[in-house]
Length: 245
Image (tube, rainbow, N blue to C red; front, top):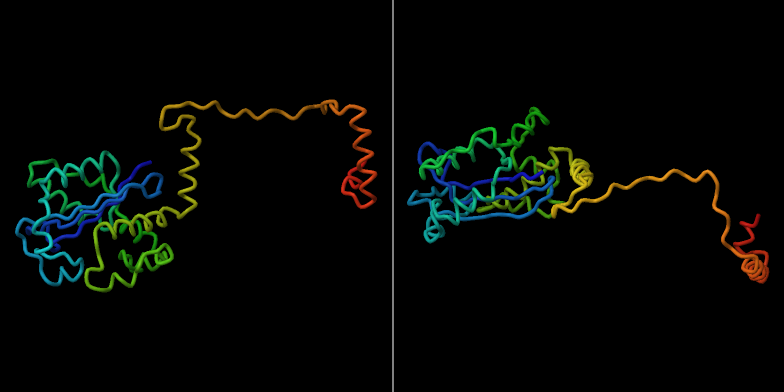
């Protein structure tokens, strides 16, 4: 099963108020295992980025000034091709969906429906009611530092990033779905399919019944005598002595 984990960085929090996307990050999941990634910085088309927002993701207008606009085929077309028809996983998905759809509508493209998105924040709130379920809180809960993520770095300026957050969310989503056991279960289901990705069909393994009678020994009399003579030379402590008779 293919899914795409998606995250954005923006100029602010108001998609309807004209805030724009400045970074997109995607991680492909195949049966919950990370695969290919996609990351693009996006010129916000003259929209200023407030200092408090720059402190979050570290992206300034100066840095983004020579980056492509969202309408550039290398951004929008590449993103939509990466999505394909796969479900899209996001944390607080409606936030990212609104920003993405605002960009698509500006280009005269159809917005993505809500049912395309899987909201990990909603899943976490159901699983851990009353607890903090921010991306950072879940990262600490699931000890993503042991998976190589620098959780302390996120507290500093520019500690957030769309691809960085998407990679973290991919691990969190795995844990919310049941952890490594769930991944193994999904992989086992795929292995049960008797056809590989190249269309090669495999014959199912047929388990044969145990023989009612043992086959007659193929050892000749001369070979048996030679073996007995060898064992006799090994002495009473020889391992073969334990299995005689």
